[in-house]
Length: 354
Ligand SMILES: Cc1ncc(COP(=O)(O)O)c(C=O)c1O
Image (cartoon, rainbow, N blue to C red; front, side, top):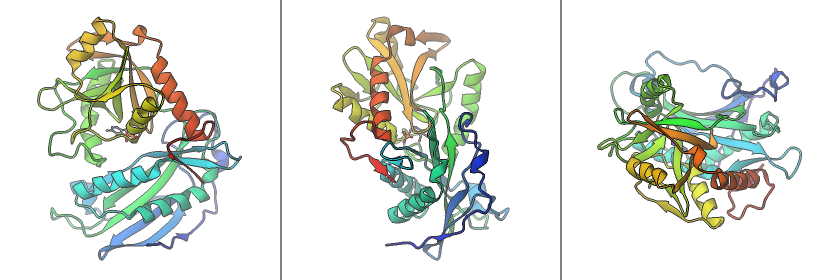
């Protein structure tokens, strides 16, 4: 299947207004966006237009019933030439997007459409990819229901869109997380494994409460007993012991992070033992008091890999950072950073250079 993409270039590029030393996260958007519409059972009207407002009916069903999903990925400057940029495992984002679409009763976006829209957009806006250290072009593919109809049913029409924004680092320090025991992010049989908009809306209030208590993020636990660690706001969780690394096993209540999978494979490649299994809060506390827990870190596209300073549980703060020298997290972060930008050979075939 191939899709023709019409391109309308902007006449007023905003690129010269970008201050590469002061990018921030998610507030400046590149010149163009990609759009396609689903109607009469097929994707049509694939196009690139100048970034700008979308007009919609007040009855647009995504606003009312939440058929809205997204992905998050990054393009980085690649060392193979002055203009080269690289994507990291983009087809995994396309696959996860479609797993989200299926669960939310939305049409799948053919991988060819996802990839050709993405590549055409990046060709046009490649100069928006920061070449400064730690900078990247964050890419936001998303889809939402567009029927103007307020009956509760899956929409017949949808918009698939991609826009991009240059970003600096998401977190710049080690984080303090609160083990959440009152609120739940996801439940068995629910939508926790998808990137549907509602998952993030439901997390805002508990996260704001945790932030009021001085934490940076919530560490979600299982919704039934609140004994088992799951993930943090938009990242997966890893515990480094003296002889192995443990990360919670995937389930319906966890988002299968592409960084998580890459970190697991990279750690094994670097000779570390990694276990994917249930991980309890009690185990973390016990291993910390026995001197076996050396590091905690979280992983995600936006955050990449960030160390945790420690975790709060039932009013007590457990400091982990001071236990170790962050050797394992540094090693794997360095390996993945070098692989992404072409400074080291990519043994996995993950990096796609444009
Ligand atoms: C809830 C949640 N968990 C984990 C992740 C990390 O996933 P990835 O590494 O694919 O960015 C994300 C971000 O996409 C997320 O939103």
